[in-house]
Length: 380
Image 1 (cartoon, rainbow, N blue to C red):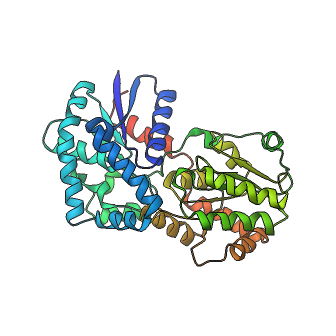
Image 2 (image 1 turned 45 degrees about the horizontal axis):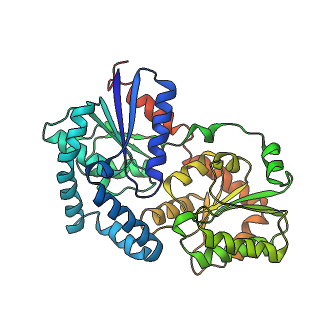
Image 3 (image 1 turned 135 degrees about the horizontal axis):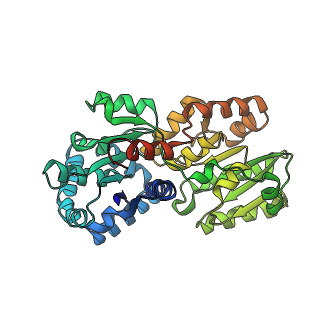
């Protein structure tokens, strides 16, 4: 039986969810392929992984500008060198796992996994095919470290493909497939049934509001936007997902109670029904993480972007706004003016919806798996 190892790292949830989507698709469609999902950083050094993931979460919550600077500075220079050097050291520990598992293909949804494996391949320690899945809509040079020994790069759009070509990566290695998403986002659901279960109507616009979850970014702006939705628009209904952010949930509930709008605003904590909720919605308000953005585009949902993390998410936001499928509410913007322009203009919303087709890659997961498993990389 052929083996595929899928590496991710726990810096944000997108890397893990993309890796899970790949594993689920392979397990469902390639019965002679054995898969295993591994947090590569936790494997090579659990204490450092614990410290760095905790630091990442604290930085993007408390001092996001500092994370943005690290993101930019790690493209090149001393910080980039330190990162690459550290991963060479960690690769020695990873080699033990790779010798034990002997995978035919290594898939990585985080640059650290790709870096460690490409280093080992350069040293002649492994011969596995290496595939890198870039999980944002703009490139970063950390993904490209060891590119001479990486066999596949999967990117979200042609702009990223052009960037990699400019970095002297051969075009034969680069595939514009999009970011892998769960097959659940391709399914058809009973819209009336879902709306009835939530106690909502089927004849007015439904807004899906992701409030930021555990990161809780831009709390005051998030509450301002939610308050504007509830207080100023009578032709909509709102599903607000507070996630694990109980402070946001409490603030939202107070706004709803004061307006007495419980019949058109539903506030949820953590939910595993995101595909169903996207399916019944007409617009999504969210920070622009790579995976959430890919899922929204696959559902042809226009976006209002809030609170992007400096660095990769701000780059995602700019690309989406330039494309016309999203509008980014910045700190200085009036939420009411932007919301009014969209919610009271069916033509505007329809144009944004049509624009999603330009960036949408609905079958990204299937395409990635076919390229890897039905080409010469694995003989089935």
